[in-house]
Amino acid sequence: MYFHYSKLRLAGRLSVMLSREVQLIRARDQDQVRNAEDVLFDMFKNEETGLLSVGKFLAALRTTGLKRNDPRLKELSDNLKKEHLKTGGHESISHETQKLDREQFRRIISPNIVLISRAFRHQFIIPDWAGFTKHIEDFYWTCKSNTEGKVASYIPQLARMNPEYWGVSVCTIDGQRFSIGDTSIPFTMQSCSKPLTYAIALERLGQETVHQYVGQEPSGRNFNELVLDYNKKPHNPMINAGAILISSLLKTLIKPEMTLAEKFDYIMNYFKRLAGGEYLGFNNAVFLSEREAADRNYALGFYMREHKCYPEKTNLREIMDFYFQCCAMEANCESMSVIAATLANGGICPITEEKVLKPDSVRDVLSLMHSCGMYDYSGQFAFKVGIPAKSGVSGSLLVVIPNVMGICTWSPPLDPLGNSCRGVQFCEELVTEFNFHSTYYDHRYDNLKYATNKKDPRRHKFETKGLSIVNLLFSAASGDVTAMRRHRLSGMDMKLSDYDGRTALHLAASEGHLDCVEFLIEQCGVPHDPKDRWGNLPIDEAETFGHTQVVEYLKNYAVAYQSEQENKKSGSSDTESVSSGKVSDPSDNSPLT
Image (cartoon, rainbow, N blue to C red; front, side, top):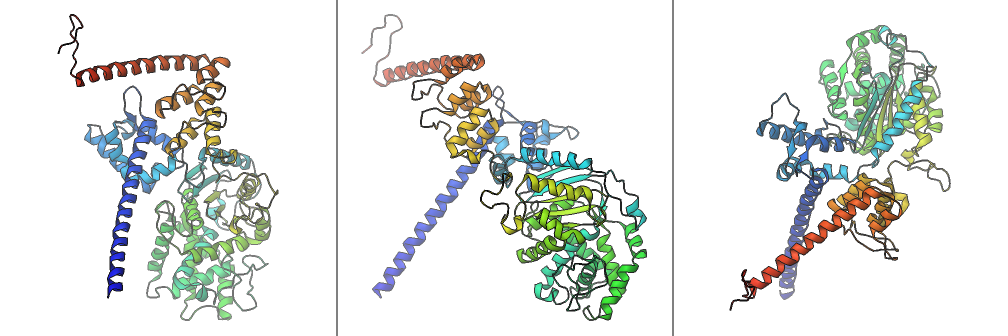
């Protein structure tokens, strides 16, 4: 009985301790959020007016990769518009012209402070977004000069495409976005729909059921050849026979009571969830043309029916129409890059944070994209590029770098194997510069010891320079105010020094970076006169190297600081006199008792 009572008392104490710990954690988190809001405001406020320019703040936010219309920032946008109207702003004038005080700023960004803090702390998968996108731009212009290939001509709608069209869109697993070129022009998905329909089949039916009907091996034959594997099944879902079979599973086994129109809406809704609500449409002219020029696909359909490949009660005519409808769905580079990023993120859409697919389904899709996604060039592409990808005859190329990003390129001219010439070249340029080859296999090859000097864009800009103190000093010496803001926002002590006692202020002054000196003193509150091991002050460094503007600024600041300290001492002396009962007589300076 006593033992049972002791256990209850112990459990009660543990419960109280746990409750207190949770309260402390919550209070600490709230303090961190408030601190982040204040630090952000201090970073971007105007020193003279004490107000923050919304335009300047949003421009800085966009440099981290977040788009203006990111769904995760909807509350920020709505709050800015409400505040704009509340303070007398007109609807025809942009809300980005506003100037906010500290309380207004806190109220407006508080719903999205976690995402915004991560952005400015460079805690996204690609921390140096500007540097990375500069490389993407370089690849884009390099590939634009590629005039090889011919536009697909088997239907007139594709044949009329301008061969000069060329666009690239990138979306990371954190929702960082970048687009260059013809990225908003719609094109039909064609074979890029195959990994998506396969993913939906896996999601709704499971791997075991799906692979009773379709294999997972490269065929080694043309993508539309009349051939089955040794089990009398299509080789994989990325060739025409396999995609037609997947269409039959979607139509016959998933919600079989649906009509063809209802099933089309069902699949379209799935695609839209994968794309995070970005543009998706349907091209009826392409659908009709595909159906008219589909002799080979009908032959594949009847050939599989002869070998009893389909589930029971399959209506072949409806299945073929459904397959052509999926191929005729429209997207653009931007929406397809989000779809690719959803696959890269394990089935969770990065811009809506909705879990659309299970990780197991995504794993199987990426495995087959890696081995079978590029028609008869799949083996060469896996060898040279080593990234899961799927091409379509419209010129699109869906590229997935698992746990990093999704990319869509679009250029209508195709090589003899049906892949976009510019798209393939872009991927080759990408893995030449960055160690993305075989990312799906945890960089098994690109991370071999002593193997490569390729860049890893997921590393922070100065991560290889050493510990945080070296990062801070290197940022100060190179004049990188953006990096110093990141250190400040991350809670780093900006007064840290190296083993010689040299601080970030010493290095910024010696290199003449006035903006860094001002940031350290005014924003971070570091002392203006720290001495290194040789007794040198920051102003001594600036004088030695002839940086007159820095010298003048530090001198003026020292004078103002000295005056402020003297005023404080004078004020404290008066206070002490009052507290001790002694009041000075202004006429004779004699004390009154």
